[in-house]
Image 1 (cartoon, one colour):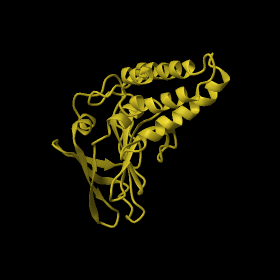
Image 2 (tube, rainbow, N blue to C red):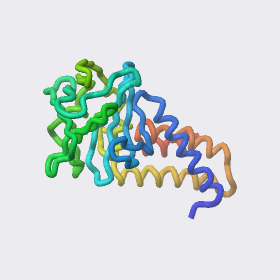
Image 3 (cartoon, helix red, strand yellow):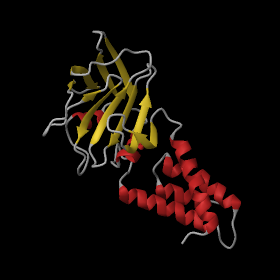
Length: 235
């Protein structure tokens, strides 16, 4: 059982880890609220220079979604019918059609006017070897053409550079060699806990805690548990 001081220090360490990961254009969000159904989930999110947001997350039963949010200055999206064309660079485009009702078998895209959500993957097993989600993970960027209710259109683009860690943490899948999943998370948590516990004995060592906090970037940014252990052990 962790000691009192350790229990107080672990949340602080977690905040340090999240702060490091939030420095990139792609961010991992521990608690993201889906604007369509209101459930809370983990998300990988980015906002481009045009003010358009792209959010990737799972719903409570594990399905993976992409959600596009609009800048305040834009008009509302079309609510039903063809609403977007999505093109991962180097792959075929996909037409997205929004429906007002959820299908019984096929889950259609949903547009609220200010946000567009489309299901990418059923979420079971390993990441798919084909399809839009696969293409998104493999592409260097994602371009989208959007149709608005007033008849206007707009095109925007997001870079996928640096998305690996945020996606691995949010969706629990490996991307470009970045490890993920519950087993990896458990191993990382145990490594952090062991290092913090060692800082307590024979008495609390503040310098040790600071070193563990600094070395934690090996886990939060590099997803490298061995590198974290080596960093902590280094003189």
